[in-house]
Image (tube, rainbow, N blue to C red; front, side, top):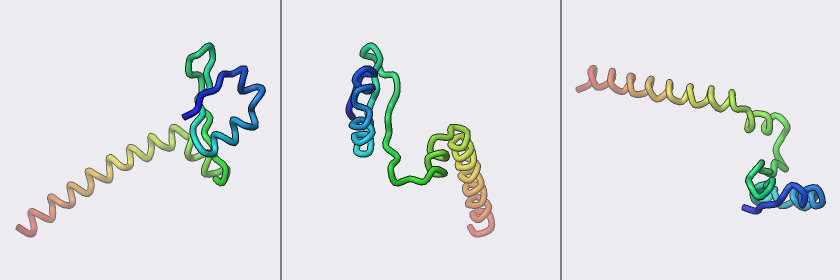
Length: 83
C-alpha cells in the first residue's frame, strides 16, 4: 500500500491513478489518512456503482444471513424425516 499527501497528489495525479491499478493508495492530509484511491480500470460503470454502494452490500449481508437460516431449517427438517 502506497501513501501520498494531498499536495503531492495534486502534482502527481496521473501517477497516483496508475499506481492505484496495482495497489491501494492512501491519501493523507496533514500526515493522517484522509481517503483511499483504488483502481477500477477494466470494470464497467455498473460494476463500480455496485462495488461502492453501501446499501447494496447491506442488503447482500441480510440476504446471506436469511439464506443460512433457511438452509439450517431445511437441514433440521430433513433430519426429522430421515433419522
